[in-house]
Image (cartoon, rainbow, N blue to C red):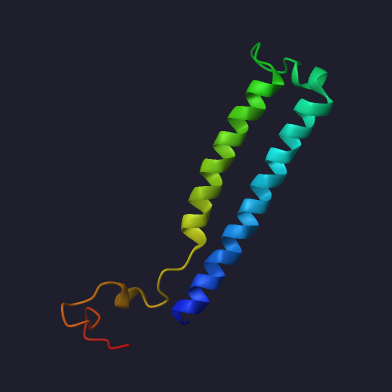
Amino acid sequence: MSDMENRQYNQRIGLRLFAIYLLLYVGFMLLCAFAPAVMERRPMGGLNLAILYGFGLIIAALVLAMLYGVMCRQDNDTDASVRNADGTAVGGKQE
């Protein structure tokens, strides 16, 4: 897979994960704007839903960032990811 294909693959993953986060955030904003009474409910530990949802957004951002890091491909040839000074892959494999 070429560098350009890797970049496009990574961009597609990034945009999909961003869309997921955007939906979560839009849901939060819509609840705040149009159903503030719902956000005042205290479902757990005396904290209202707005606080819990906000912390959920922060955690979701971290999880999605880690997922992006795992899903993105850097190099298909794991041996070629470590190179000698002359550009050859460790182990003598040439690309």
